[in-house]
Image 1 (cartoon, one colour):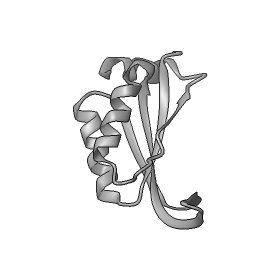
Image 2: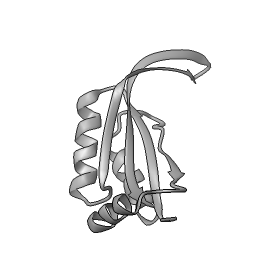
Image 3: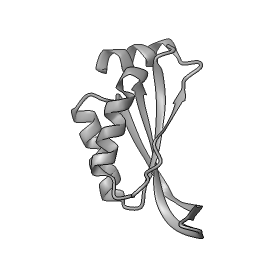
Image 4: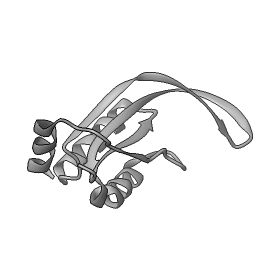
Length: 104
């Protein structure tokens, strides 16, 4: 269980978010990729407060796949500094864990 992670990233373009998810799935770098949005993001960028509509993506993967997930996102992402963060999964149902393990 301690090797399952949730990777989070955001995109300003739904199609790019979807294409990235498909690429990660094809490479077997994740078991599931979810796109939620649009959401409103408010953030600092180059000394200004910016606002934009974005799609947030939840990626179910494993610790040992993080670098490959990160590199795939960076290759496809339009942002200069994309958000790519990983959160460890502390608890997970056995059936869901087995399903993830059967894929990646």
